[in-house]
Amino acid sequence: MAGGMGMGGQGTYTWAPAAGMSGNVYGHFYRAMDPKETELDRKAREMAGNLQREQNPQKKAEMKTALATLISEQFQIRQQRRGEEIKRLEDELKRLRDANEKREKSKDAIIARRVAELTGEDDLGF
Image 1 (cartoon, rainbow, N blue to C red):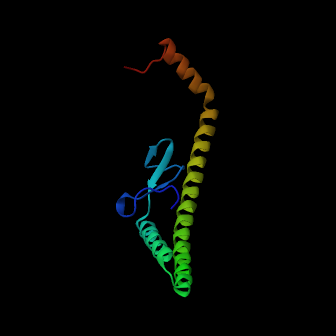
Image 2 (cartoon, rainbow, N blue to C red):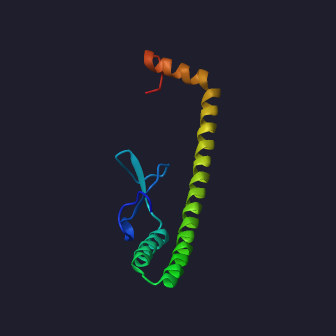
Image 3 (cartoon, rainbow, N blue to C red):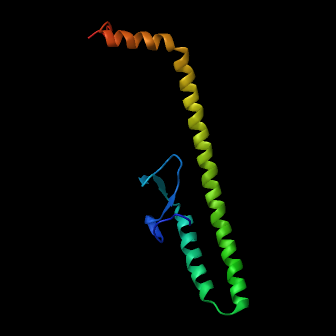
């Protein structure tokens, strides 16, 4: 996991410069990883360590294939999460565009209300 922190469990984070952020560390946003992804990451790191120590070329090839399968599963989980994030961002963008369009249509009333507020001419009925 590039840019990650921690080695597993509930405290594992991944860098995510998108909305829905959990925090900000030196200008980088991070979000808690999905528990399934966390477990796959732990297994991949463990498997990679075992692979580096393995001396038998045949076993090493088998372990590398298994590692690629595991990483492929982790990739799919991340892609699904990114797709969901894109959908959420598109929905948010639509909401913001609609609100901006509505404000543009009400521009004159908004300006008049603000002028009245600043000049003390607003009658709020209090």
